[in-house]
Amino acid sequence: KIDEIRDVLDSCLTEILDSHVDLSISDPIRDRLDRTLGDHVGDPPNDQAHLDEIQKRGLERYAIKKPPGYEDQVKDKDPTGAYDHGGLRYESQFGDLILWEQIIEWCKESPGKSVIFVTADTKDDWWLRISGKTIGPRPELIEEITSRGSVTRFWMYSFSNFGKYAKEYLDAELSERSIEQISMVADPKVKSKLAHRDDLFAKYNNSAKTRSAPREVQSSLAFQWLNQHSDVVLPGRFC
Image (cartoon, rainbow, N blue to C red; front, side, top):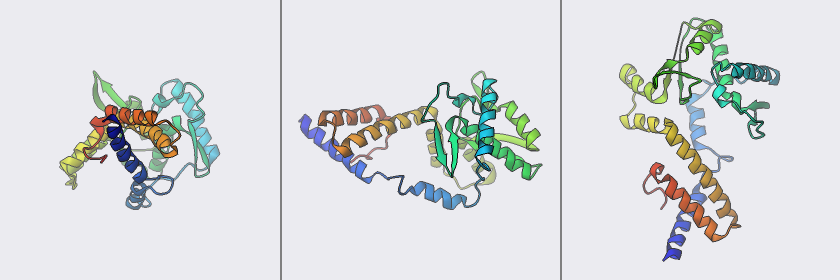
């Protein structure tokens, strides 16, 4: 009986693996985003020297806990914490700061703007919280962008709140279900579970495709994946 259950489970997961999108070849979600955003995407840093200067300042800012980004600081040298893109070498721990610098540079081109920043980031190096309640963006961020970027007004919204207010005040065509889904995906607990699920899935994927792991190991990984993450998986997704 157990062998039959394992066979069914293995068959279902193999079907998933075979249909899994290879992002190195094609990413339909990214393609759709590219079409939607068009040329409404900021330019990358000018060159490696410019990028290195931002990252160097990042170390100084992080040392005094100046937002944003210091909660992403790598305390130990991590060889996997850097990546190459567009001919430039980025350190992952400075991703938030690089984005922040790009926003400020964009604001300088047209001073006097009112700027809204929508983000899924929930860490304290972006948000001011008092007694567990989120009040708004960190005051340091407001001060920096208004002074350096000549911004008139600056505010931040989570994805879910932006969607809710856009529907309420701008008559945006957004269903309640969409807002609920945005809130769910943005939830740090859900994101953590999804990340761990993907890690387990990758491990099982590797062992299943190479078939080098014993059958007991493959089944064990599959059962772990299902048991630990059934609360974030849509019904009927497997078979």
